[in-house]
Image (tube, rainbow, N blue to C red; front, side, top):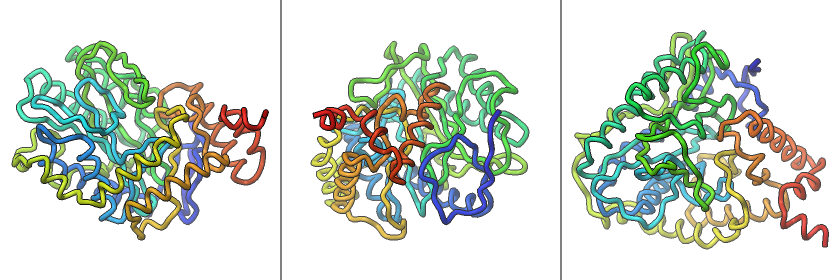
Length: 407
């Protein structure tokens, strides 16, 4: 049976998930509303830039600059060794695509996933973009995926259960003979990047935790033209369809209210699904580079410079984030972000940061065993921060430190 915690104070930010579903009040809704709006504004601002020829890294730099200008920072940057400000997944990439030098091509479908942290609150959202003239088959997949999301959100109201959301999504997708990805799911969020509950996108009505006012979570169905199966590539992050079929995803962060749900990440401009007619003007690649500015280029250089320090760490699907310990009102310059990431590396080497061991740090990847292991890992990490049993936890999950200690 699900456990629920009523949150009545926000001056102490939790350091790890405890398995209980949090029920928030007006202050929590206000925080999520602001973070969600910023995330949606970033999605809107990207519309004219997602064009043939632009590199996905340039889009990532743009995301970084917008968050920094707003006094926020990317939850993904430095998260378990992930060194980008967004996830950008193209065509058959299901999720967690890593931005890079690959230019977008005419006919691509692209998912961009961002999570700005604003005043301690996480606004998590993703949206699909059509690059130029996209084939009818791909367009239809994108349309149905958006319909799946909204049909799921129709079931997000008090008294219903998470299984009702999952069933609505699965029924609509399978009616079109599409596959619903089971390997990844939505999640609770708020002052933590990933929290209880796990929100699966295929299931039976009337099952799962009951929806109660004050719950915050994401709904983010991943729908494949082919079979649901996917695999993670050697980089430890990029998930692709096993049959190489196209995949699409939309994501909203929501809060359960007394009568239904509030969508925190709804587009202020009405750009909730493509095609985004009002922003059809195309811009050349160098334009977005100019908008992102030299500062974003410096940020990329810092991330690339520090990146090798994370190379030995196995990358999980999702886990408790490593976030900068700073007031959200003070923006960090890109070089400061790099210095902060270097500090995180040092903390991880000393065992002060949460464990990066993949099996115990992936509550986002669905499975009761993995979630239980993640909670045990989080508890051990908290103990270490309090100076209790940290050495045993660190040695158990870091082979390099184990070898050094044994020597």
